[in-house]
Length: 439
Image (cartoon, rainbow, N blue to C red; front, side, top):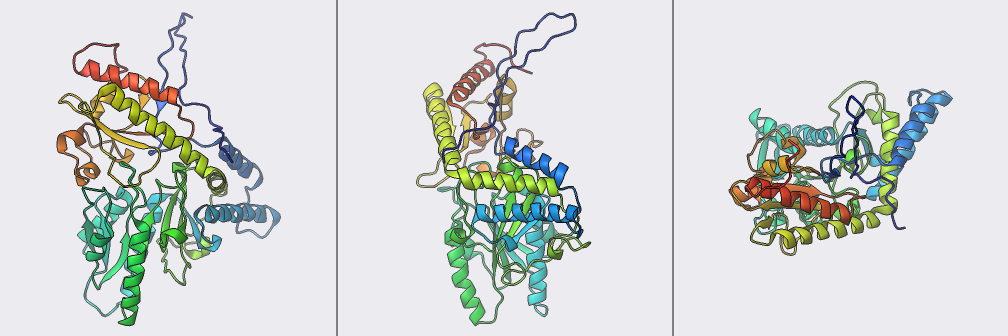
C-alpha cells in the first residue's frame, strides 16, 4: 500500500504580532532534517495514546475489567512489535527506551558469563565496534574501568565504514560472552553486515559447544534502522535486538527482543519489584505509551517499503542538488562507501574550507534544522565526530560535517529551500554577503 504522509510538512510559516498590533514579516520557512535524532508522533499514534489514556487507564495487573482492558492493549502492542521485526510476541520486553535495552543486554551477558563460568579467572569479554551509540559504548567502558569485564572495540573499515565480520570474529576469545554491533550507524547510515556476523558466530558456537564452552550471544541495536528499512530477526540471526520508538514516529519508550526469552537466550533483570514483564522488567506498565509504540510498529509493518522509497528519493535528490550547487571541489559526502548499503534517509557531508565548520554553518542557516552528528554529542563543541574519524574521514573534513536526515513527509521543495539556505550560509561565512543569519 502506498503510504500517504499524514503529517503536515515541517516547513511552517510563523507570523508574529508584536505589541502595538503591527504585523511583522513572516520569518523564512523552517525545514526539519534531523529525523535520525527524533521523529514527531504520527497522528494515529497520538490517537492510540489518547484512547489508552481515556479507556485503558487500569492497572494491567488487576483482575477486574479495567485492568484486563489495559492488559489487552499491552498484549496487542506486543504482537504489533513482534510482527514488525518478524519475531514472536513472547520474546518482546517493554523498556523505557534504547538506553535501558542496551544496558540490560550488556549487564545480562556479563551476569550470565559469571554464572556459566564461575570457576574461571578470565573476565567476561565483550566484542563491539568503534562507532556504537553511547548507550553501548559508555556502559562497556564503565565495565572495563571497574574490571568487571574486558572489552574489545573493533575499528570499522575505512573502505566500507562497516565492522567487518572477519575483524569481529578475530577479536573473539574463549571468555567472549557477547558480540554487540549496531544494525545501522546513526551518523553515516551505513548498514552493518549483521547476517554475516551472525552466521560466523553461530558456526563458532557449534565449535564451542563441542568443547564445553558457553555460547556467544549476538545483539544488535536496531534503533536507526526500524521504520527506514525492513528488519527481520530471522534474516539477521540475532539473539537480542533493541527497539526505540521515537526513531519511527512513536513515543519515547522502547523494547527489547530476546530470542527464546529465558530459554534459548538468558536475560537477567536490572530492576526488582512487582513482577511485570515476567519479572524481566518490573514496574507498572506505561499502557498509553506502549499503545502508541504498538501503533507506530503497525504503521511500519504496513508502509515500510513506501516510507523507504520516499526517503531514498528525497535523500538522493538532496545529494544531487548539493553537488550541483556547490561542486565536487567544495563538498565532500562522508557517507558514501562503494558497494555498501546505507539508510535511505541519511546524508552526511562536509563543506570544504577553513571557516565552514558544521556548527558555524548551521548557526548561519535561517531555515534548516539539522545537526552535526549524534544528538547525544551536541555538547562536544567543534570536535570532529569520532564516528567519522573512525571511518577514515580526515580531521578537517570531519570537523565541517553536517548530518541531514530526511523523513516521511520531507519534500523536494524543502530540499531546494535547504540548499539555497546552505548556499547563503556558506557565502556569509566566507565573507561574500547574503541576508543576515538567524543568530
